[in-house]
Amino acid sequence: MKIGAHLSIAGGYHKALERVNDIGGNCLQIFSASPRGWNRAVLTDEAKQLFIETKKKLGIDAVFFHASYLINLADEGRIGDESKKSLIAELNVASQLGVVGSIVHTGSFKGSLPAIWDVSQDKKYSVLINNIHEVLTSTPQDTFLILENAGNKKIGQNIDELASIIRDVDNERLKICLDTCHLFSAGYALSTQKKLGDFLTEFDKKIGLKKLIVLHINDSRDPFDSGRDRHENIGVGTLSMEPFKLLVHDKRTCNLPFIIETPGFDGKGPDKKNIDILKSLV
Image (cartoon, rainbow, N blue to C red; front, side, top):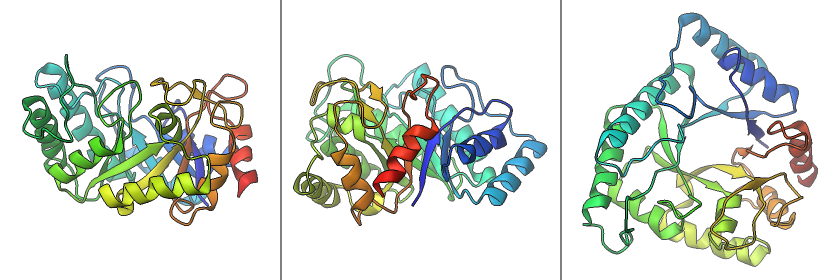
């Protein structure tokens, strides 16, 4: 089973591989550059070689980038342009490193939210779809653009919205990442086998389980259906342990990479204790 974490790239991309191995992980998520600016990843031949060699030595084959927090693919101005440039640069680096792809928070519509699962001709929605098309047509075919389900009333907060985007982009390289905290925040209960089964059946019908390629495994600090998406350490938040137990055993999800983005029991980010808790459920 693949269980890993989002970790720092301080000292180089290869150091993140060593860090996740040190805490018992066998898959990884990293930023390609600072997530709070429009910095582009700079890949030297030495950094590329070190990463590829370390990846092979440690046997870590599932590595993902997480895109900048500034990304907004629904913006038709400067932010939208910078978002596209950032993702295009990132996916080009991903191809060189053998990274699966880039997980992205799609963004938000300015002002009122169009009902994008009903009104697909809305101008704001068209901007979103066209920008995603441009990213995919400008990047290597061996990489994926991976949409994460959103929290805080952003685009993709529910399955219908994600399904509309997947349908209207219609590209095999557009995939999905589901975050347990964000699902809980949006009112999706996964706390029993039936509830999880019903959710996965709905997802498969509307999107297709083949589109789901990675899970973010996070507990929540906030109540169910709160619209808030603050992450908590596994087992000490409001989700309870049951959804995590079910996900690691369900045949539809157990073979996916599980990436934790928790605050850490020492407050320093994803840690061995969180990973060990997940492993204990397997």
